[in-house]
Length: 79
Image 1 (tube, helix red, strand yellow):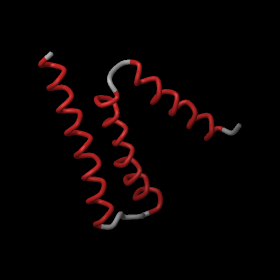
Image 2 (tube, rainbow, N blue to C red):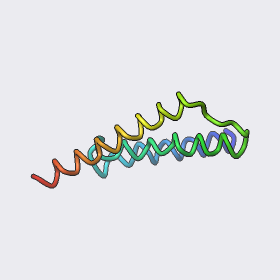
Image 3 (cartoon, rainbow, N blue to C red):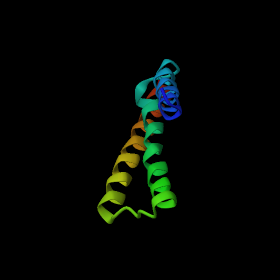
Image 4 (cartoon, one colour):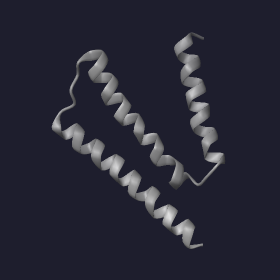
């Protein structure tokens, strides 16, 4: 097993373990930040700039995740 595979294993175990600490609807939106970092790394490393359709898709995914997190927090605070 090489270094990259170990790093991916550690990352995935951390992501899965985080679901022990809260509801999936609250935790899952934080995983969408991977889209932002992927776009940033793609630009910095490869000089790749996502097209308009990609930006719209990323905005929809991140926006819906943030909305769900906001809604879930409001529902939890009401109880």
